Image 1 (tube, helix red, strand yellow):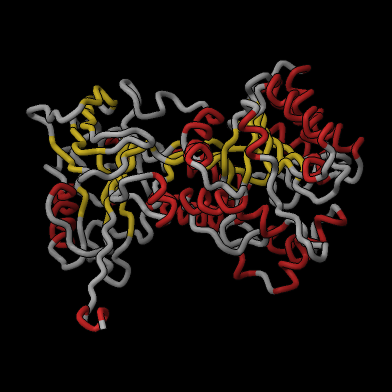
Image 2: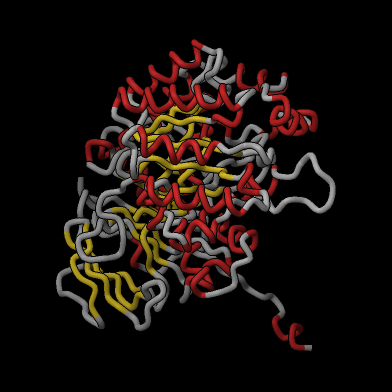
Length: 509
């Protein structure tokens, strides 16, 4: 499919935008539309910021007419597909934490060269104008199936989350919410999360979906469809997650194994949710057995509790070594006993995590919201020992975790926002600390997901973000969105923001 030179390189009108992508047969995957126009449909001008899959516009001659008419409207821009692979030079780019301005030469969807002040003939050029260029962001922990359900809960529902964390049981409000889930409902909300996060430059997600006797495999099946639907636009890994526990729940165990058999990328676990430490151990046994049976990695929500006796992360690290899962396991929300002043225990965990190649994922927004909920002042900070783990050489990454659900009623899929909150929660003000947070939402997450050819070096896939900001510090300070998002060197979308003072002379008075 050939649609000519994309308008991304011409002067841009104000937002919002319509973003066009090739069909699945075109090689870049498909992205279902917010609305579903037929071959002879008229543009939906009531909601212009919409993603449209060209494969639903048939025949192509009609599609071209439809696209042309839409492109002529004010305040709308079309990014026209120009084929699977293109050659491109991003000139005047700043690379994070390096000096100078560089040209990034892209050939065949990969970075061919990074040179000072060179523009290769015959390629299209994107001028970064001195802005930061970095690889796409990585969200190491997100629950798509629960996203955008906060409006279905009243205050009792939100209070029920804290209650459930104490009693180790799901509350009636959350149970009824999950019972109402349908595959189509999860699909719609999942699409909303992924399209919104793409605007913020998130190009890889580790997606947690519940598999239990309440929802069965509905959430998992929806995630499989989303993975196929967004193939080529972003990388998705599916974690089969036994949210309601495994001990004494043979049906939940069976569903976990079934999801691993049917295509889950990762087997998840939540041992702290069980009633006793012994049940938590049995929970981990089932998780690792399922992962071993089907050759999967493991991701555990270890100690997402204020209980100072919760030590699951230590058992997870030990089990990684015993079961042959070195460098194949991640643990999120590692608080519990790590939140205590027991330095001997902390040192044991960090040492064992390093030996096991265990990665640690912190989701700062949800952790800050939920930790210390049952206590009076002073509240716990609610963060695992991010700096201690990192300084010891443990791989530490970050995740959004929740978006507008019972656990966190905010969030918008912005890993820059996640990093901004991390900076404050971990009290980071140094250049070294800033680089750590940047790595947590890029390279460290990519290491957990084992993303192929990720980064900003020769040979890496050209899945890149171009910012107007000229430093990583400015990106976090402004909580910025990327100006351009590219997949394999192909421009996917552009955002512009313009502010006009109507009476600027009054501002100086």
